[in-house]
Image 1 (cartoon, one colour):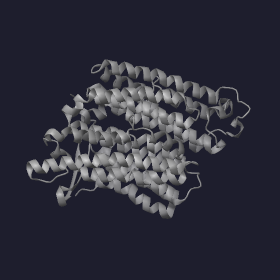
Image 2 (tube, helix red, strand yellow):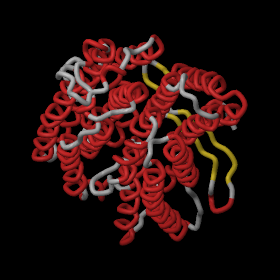
Image 3 (cartoon, rainbow, N blue to C red):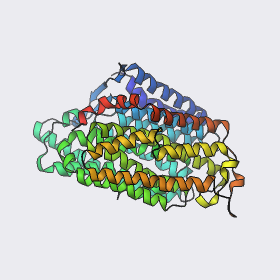
Image 4 (cartoon, rainbow, N blue to C red):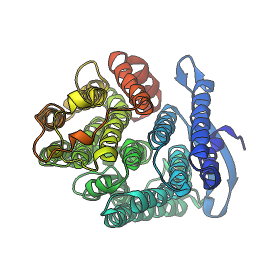
Length: 478
């Protein structure tokens, strides 16, 4: 068994163990080591600018369970996002007075997420999928805000229930393959040719239920606002930046390849829910008075764009929707971090709690405004590229869904820009806590400069990013 891919998920797991003794210093070292390993794998496997597919095979156990890892550009892209945001979270949390368990949970979460994106044996895929729940449960429940226990339990119950549906679907799929061939296997490639007959719709919709909860897709989204509102800022970054991407990744890696016909037949339903999510999430964001809750609802809308592109099964839609997964991780991650910086200073995050911050904290105003413009899809920044291509793909399949998505883009400006104006440019009211807010320090500025430059790079030169993902998605084009 080769080592490089295995080391990708073992390195942050080892970091979680070391954090018990070295706390933030262990987290920083292993976060940097993890990011370096990911960069090495990406560069070492690149040939002519295209990432080749690399496989690792291990022993086969009972019922066909096997240790099988594989990495293509889709996997490595999302693992790179995981490593990058994990390092960002460590840097952003550096001055927090938290115990060693806080740092260990972030490293364990990075390990489990990496396993999800690498596993090609569906048993291990499910194990890694479930493993992500544990560290995030503790991140929310131990280091969140005042209502953290309720939010942590709600997060766990919703996502665990979705995982149960996914497990039942996988068991039905594996059992059907054994009934037909006489061979037990959980290998995704071997199961691709399985003919399920009349149980196929049940298996397909079981998988969709598991993935839809994680995205989250309306009406299975209600856990998300509470989880984001109560989680610490870094927890929200990993939750929105990477964990929500697991659902879309499951569609791309499992549901769409295994059930191409059923996914096409379900397009009006799933595409309609995705389009509705873009509008519903934006309308709910408009109604919020809490900055963090507003950004949480905006995530529902943004993931709707990703889904529209992916479900279109067109080349434009797939690459645009996948790139939007990266874009959302960068822009929403930056916004959640800045709300966290505000809360650390003033212990408030309501829209009416501030005012006139642009003169008091010009760096914070600049980065918040920049990230807001990227989030609503300003041309020249990263959000525009992904949303435009996702909507273009949807337009060629179901035009009415694309028009609904355009309405979602308009509504995004209707909630994001007034919120930015209220916090940074409106006169401070009598209950304002703006006097407590100091501007960003060097560490915080360095974190946000890094995120902002990536947003600008993708917005001005998206072609290399799109070309990077295209080979892994080519087989899904209808």
